[in-house]
Length: 124
Image (tube, rainbow, N blue to C red; front, top):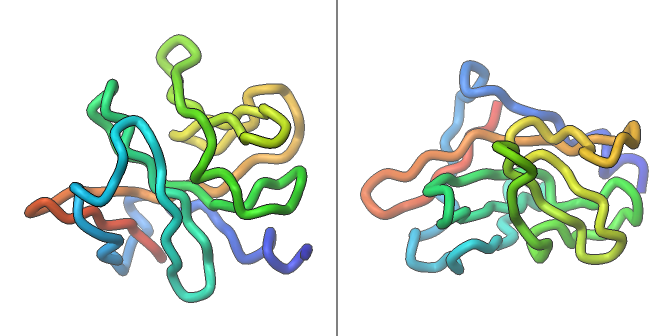
């Protein structure tokens, strides 16, 4: 399972060389996430309707090593958008991937853009 965590690496907007069309905006639940697959990676994409923002992270929970984050609850900690793993409730920043519970493990994040009612995730 360790190889799964190594393959996930945060991508900044400046590093994007591929915009992958994930699916239509209408396919996403309001204030929720979906799992997409890109070159063997499982990516959680979130439509944070209350904030009018989109986010993407690895779908792999770094604690339980399960592909579950897309089904986590999203919310805010002050101004910080976050997702809580549905298994152990550890929370992660949707912007930076930082573990907001003070644990060492973080998650990878990816840029998201919406154009012509389609959602795109950026990869390097």
